[in-house]
Length: 315
Image (cartoon, rainbow, N blue to C red; front, top):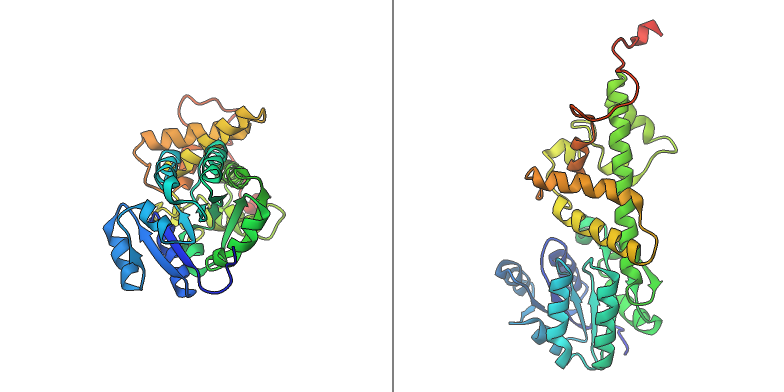
């Protein structure tokens, strides 16, 4: 399977991430067949030269490589199952974030049907997809990976082969737990600084020049008005929703339990994400769970409130 030059590609799932990824495949000179539940993105891509298809199976049937970007395990299982009769000699690359066990099951089914399968979840958000800087975490055979990577490079800034089919999902779920654990800790530190009379802008700027600096500090600082591009400063407009992050952290917790390494920090995050959804914030950016971190009436605190803090002049 030689993937040099223009390739007949397919894309199923043209949502927030899939649409810009598919556009970059067209811009890179690849042929593209596409299908999606929503007709708007299909029409948009057709205007750019893509070939709309009525079903995912039709996309796979006319493509050398078909990329999936779907919302959950059920959707991926349904789409891949429908494509098994036409997958022989073809490759499916799943960019969705789903359970590693789901990918291992589907990889086996596709291989048995004579096709190739990679799981390849992505990180970097819609902006990364637009400018082609996504991180792609791939699981699958090295030979298939080597032939598919030049096509993935159309929207990726970094691509790594993590191991077996399903390993890409393990890496992605680890990333999600780490991001949320950092955000939880950052929200607690922001509250600590606030109750201690420290300007949140000073905290943000100091962290950005210290060993505590991170992508979360720079992109998801939880105090409104501090970081201009953070969701907190933009009414929690979503880059990645609370509902989607809840799904990912739940997957990470379940997989961790299956392999005997449950990430305990995920439990506290799951509680906060669940509470945020119940408050009607499922569609807000996931970082909005930081608003639930400050102590509330009846919540246990340690020691006494800092009622009479010295001012800068007193110190």
